[in-house]
Structure formats: structure tokens, C-alpha cells
Length: 131
Image (tube, rainbow, N blue to C red):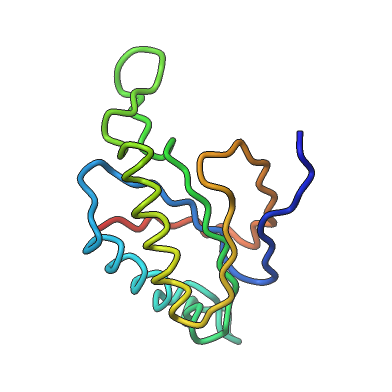
């Protein structure tokens, strides 16, 4: 096991990215804009009222095809809805580039790698963004 750190952010968000077989660049554009402007960080009153752009939050973008694991049938997840690795890499890299254009601090993991991702979940906030 390699102990190399590929990406590290301070205060911000860990974003797990799954790419569906039906996704295209229009989906990536929509989700990049949504991510950088979505108000899910707390303001001084504890209300979710600030976006990553408002506070200059770091974003750790991690590819995660298993988000498309379908567990409804049988005892093993099926991944038919996930994009092929080639298509997923193309859209993942496109998405990362779009988010980086925002000027926010962006770090990534390694596409298709087995990684150990550590995070401190500050509060009960986990959101699902879908196009």
C-alpha cells in the first residue's frame, strides 16, 4: 500500500463523483455550477446560507463509480448504469476542469485507484446532486 497523499484540503467539502452511462458534458456543466454555488455551508447564525464560492472552500473531488451500484436484486451490486471507465474518466476530468475554473482550491484523488479517503464530517450534512 502506498502512503502517498494525492489531495488534501482544509475546510471545504469532499465530493464523490459517479458518472452514469447516460451522462454527458451538459450534465457535468450543470453539476459543476450547482456545486460551486450551492449554499450548504453555515453562516454566522448556523444557517446553511453560504456557498463554496462565498467562503473560498476547498473541494476534494473523488471519482466513485460504486455510487451507481444497483443493489435492488440479488446479493451483489450491479454496475450496468455506470459509465465505462473510458467515458467516466473523460467526464470526470472535464468536471474537475470546470470546477477549477471557478478559482476555488480543488484537489483530486486518482481515477480508478484503490484509495483510503479520510475526512472529518463536521455536522450531519450529506447531499446528493444529480442532473
